Length: 488
Image (cartoon, rainbow, N blue to C red; front, side):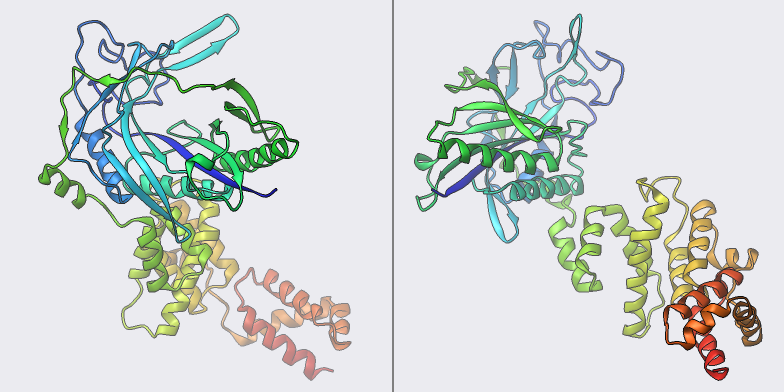
């Protein structure tokens, strides 16, 4: 029997706010000193009262608007009651039946993945397990945590990965969160089940659901789903039952493993949080304020960059994924002279993209292009690209010039003049170098006369080496051929 995969995602995102969700403690999950950013409120001391973080609420609503969600007129917070050592109050302030955002969607490969809800809650503390016992760091307790729940509209590991990646990109464009999975700022949990193909896609036909936790990378999301599809298929084919359970992911072994069975849903005894007011989301001024803050989104940027610059798919996606690099690229292009012929401008744009993606990325070595240590101005980079396009420097010299620009921030023309890197334009000087190379490499000359084209490439390389890259490869190639053909 063939099976249809049914997948829903639960994604938790730590919001980028100055303070925690219900108190004035700093929201700094990277704080190395344990239990440093804490207070009686986030520790749940008796008699303390929470105060809602307005910025966190705005960020959730902004996310909902971008993801095409409906915004109910009213929303409230609830107490989710359960006991665990990292939960100091003995309950978590969360949202149950009246979240901020409902019934949205995100387009993935021209298909709508529906979003059931987006709600806001507080994060828990962090457990540190040691040989002697377990320790608790409450720095993370109370950090604003947004939870997004999809409908079971995803059908493969690749689709789950692409959804999570696109969501991360949107969150970064909106400055909602850095959403770094390795740091736990974005956590993806997968609910997966199988059902026989051909049946109607309704929950009554879905198979037994298995939840996968501890996925700390997009690659792990895809691999875990693919493994679980294979495991559940093999289980069903052997006429065994799928157990409703929570499973972890072993990245080294590439397989899921059972953590605990879930026979019934937990009863968290939700009830309205008595210390917080019901929120009215129909306040038009707040919504207008939020809409003004929404920037160009990744999907919009893809379409615009493709239309304006005719970039290839690889370059296009890199400039969308790396927002700062994309913005720098557009600043460089804007520095080119107005009124250029379309053909020349197109060549300059392509050269700019190539050098930014390859050579400059190599110099950056993972650092950010908008950091204080990055010294190359868009004006200087556009001048550098123009010098290459006009044939005033070779590709070899271009690498040397760019490296010096990266190191000092100097103007490329000044670097070329100071280091005497200008191309050799004297035909006599080029011919003299070629004659020297020919006299020292008679075997290559004979090979060329026998019809071996590779010999020309070798001779050109020798000339470029002696000229230290300052001879034009085009002129060198033409002149070598003329001299060798003449002497045949």
